Length: 90
Image (cartoon, rainbow, N blue to C red):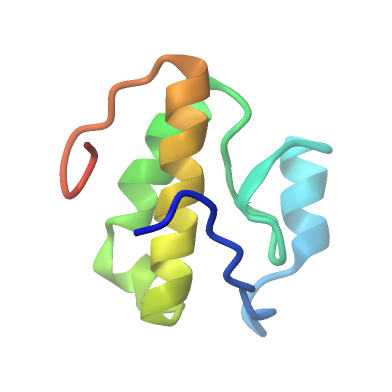
C-alpha cells in the first residue's frame, strides 16, 4: 500500500456532517466527508479504530473507503503516539 491515500469517501444518506461537526467541533476526521471518526485526540483515535472495526459500521462504506479511513486513523495514531491493537494495527 502506498503512503498517501486520497480515496474519496462518498456522502452517506444516513448521517449529517453538521451533526459530527456540532458534536466534535472543527477537528480532523478520518471520514472528512461525513464528519465521522474524529482523530484529534488519543482517545478519539482509539475510539475511531474500535468503531471502524465493527462490521455494521464498516458495512456503510466501500472496501476502499474503509481502507482509507483506517489509513487516516493509523497516521493520526502515529502523530498522537497511540498504539493500535487489533486487525492490521501495525
